Amino acid sequence: MSAHSDTHRAIDAVWRIESAKLIAGLARIVRDVGVAEELAQDALLVALERWPESGVPDNPGAWLMATAKHRAIDHVRRDKRLAYKHEEIAREIEAQRDTGVDDLDAALDDQVGDDLLRLVFTTCHPVLSTEARVALTLRLLGGLTTVEIARAFLVPEPTIAQRIVRAKRTLTEAHVPFEVPRGAELADRLASVLEVVYLIFNEGYTATSGDAWVRPTLCEDALRLGRILAELMPNESEVHGLVALMEIQTSRLRARVDARGKPVPLLEQNRARWDHVLVHRGLAALARAEALGEALGPYALQAAIAACHARARTREDTDWTRIAALYDALSQVAPSPIVELNRAVAVAMAFGPAAGLEIVDALVSEPLLASYHLLPAVRGDFLVKLGRFDEARAELERAASLTRNDRERELLLERAASCRRSVAGAP
Amino acid sequence: MRVIVMVKANKESEAGVMPDEKMLTEMGKFNEELVKAGIMLAGEGLQPSSKGARVNFSGSKRTVVDGPFTEAKELVAGFWIWQVKSLDEAIEWAKRCPNPFPEGESELEIRPVFEAEDFGAEFTPELREQEERLRQQIAAQQ
Image 1 (cartoon, each protein chain N blue to C red):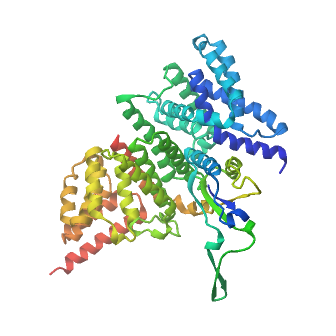
Image 2 (image 1 turned 60 degrees about the horizontal axis):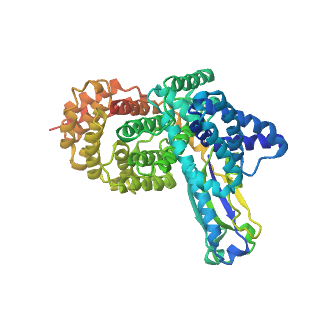
Image 3 (image 1 turned 90 degrees about the vertical axis):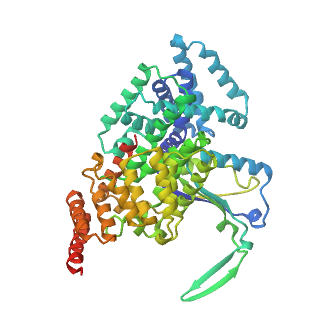
């Protein structure tokens, strides 16, 4: 390995670590994330030119920032709206020269955090489409290249490049301020940020196809973003809730398929294969959400449900009464037929199939679930347990006709057939 | 990817000399940076090997050997588990670590954890069903 390519790999790594802070700090000065990213890229080019000769400096982040700020000054000089900023930046550069790096680090720590938060709220701004938010967040905060994002989402690179260019232009044209929303606006805007992170996560977690290597990295990217957010907004319970949910879900990745690649349902998973480092982190994050003392939001509630499974050493240890109560709370804050169906399952596990059936019967006319195979599958299961085999058979057959999963269809038809035998054999 | 970063032991750590306040502060700051960057999964300092034990295997025989053990350089005084994008990123972070034993020689060893191949079977058509379910759930919650 030549020294030259070693330096290039080191520069890549420095960029990965520093780019978000760099772009965020510059955006505060120039008030435009697009321009900020260009300035940061320019500084990177200077580094690529000089570092192979001079070696990587001791504090590469500060070096990049100083270089970029000098360029920012030129930019600000050209832009009259920003004229007043000129002196401020000059002062910052001066301060950096005069102060020891350590003192400066401490002094700038808060500032860096504030800038990063502003950047998050900008890349997840509702003026952008969801797709644009996802791409821009991964690019500017996650430090991913356009190529990496394209590969992860299985779309051509120019599509992502275009999406990012347009997103930056939209932000400029809409005069989106580089700031953290306050008061009543904060809750909505935070929901938009968390949605972007969870979308990235699910894209990795429920990968449809493609390169096995790439997709789980999206889970890692989302988790990393979530953990960064949790440090930036330690008093927001839903941020910890989302992190907890993602940590616990990720802990099951290894156990979700068997040796032949077949999916393994949660209750049948080998709990020894769960990643207990992540389980532990998830439970700790949930504890932080709960410690804030507010009523739990949708993410924290889903995490609390996941935590019930994570805490149970065997499936028989599962606290279904608590899960049913949590689904009850979830259906209050985020009502949806899917949540209701899940609640029915938990209630049936806790209080018997008749109680579950009562909830499911109320869902039968729900249009959102009209072609959802799990509704008749769940209803059929309850009916079997209640010994109502004729009705059960009809539901299981209906479920089989709705599923697109061959293996699941087989299982459903087998159960339907055994219902017929039970009816025939009944006295 | 996940890496384990091991802080190698030396004579001081093996003698049970505790880090001074300055080192604790600097290490605390470094740990804080790792947490803020979202890469630190776990990290612990280890007591000297004199407090530990080894279980040796020879065929079906097991022998317990109490510490301390010789060859301080080959022993571990602490470790982190980091979630990083690449070995290079881990190296870059490791370079930013304060020298754990400022008066002498120290070493951090970075070793990637096996995990990627575990995901190999993850991407089956069967899982599409689950994706569908999640998407519906997200859509329904909007």
